[in-house]
Length: 290
Image 1 (tube, helix red, strand yellow):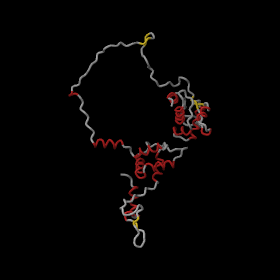
Image 2: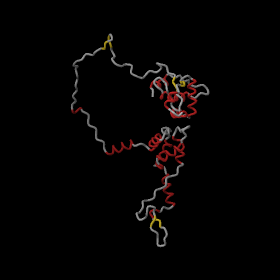
Image 3: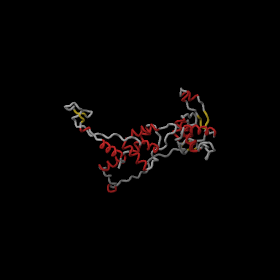
Image 4: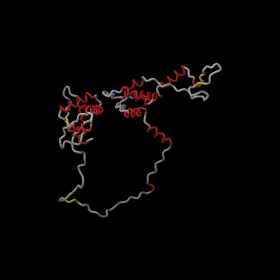
């Protein structure tokens, strides 16, 4: 990462707005240029991120990124650099990205350092030395009556409420799991109604099942920008099978008792669940969380 290159892309890059007909929009060009600056040196050289990486930065398709790169070359903001540097790093030719150099000039973007460094005052080339010695110090002694009262200790109720506030919501847990899986869809743009649907799906199916479904619907060349695109797929999932009551201890692990006197298999009553009971449990599991 180069702060100088990013500063140049934000403040000095001349990107027209609006852009000429047939050219990508100015915001798309700006984000793609920022992605290149993020991988360039402090002088804007040797930037070779992949097209997929730039598409992830700009939240656009890889084909649109290629159009943006051609437009940036046409505007004179970037140019093809020494491709031998990429060949020295990546051996496979079919996986080598194109190396670009930003059209930065010396002095276009200075390093954001403090202007005042070192000694602030000099006289005839000699550093000014402050006088040393004892200085008057004023000490304030607080009267015990003026001291602030000690804060009360946190009660169990306070600690419990604090833990509940710090506990992430189901939507936040799902968003974290999706980011770890490489999904870039945003959850902060969901409306309250859609957040309620996502919370219901998390309570019903769990985070892992929803992440697997989102990965099945994921298209790397055109990723979803909002998690709202996955809500219909999450709602179409089959509800989990209801759990049977615990075993009584008289049957085996499969719920069978010893055969009767006629040699017929006997199902243990603790493993029996009528179809009406199963439908009732499934209906209860599908109800929205209160």
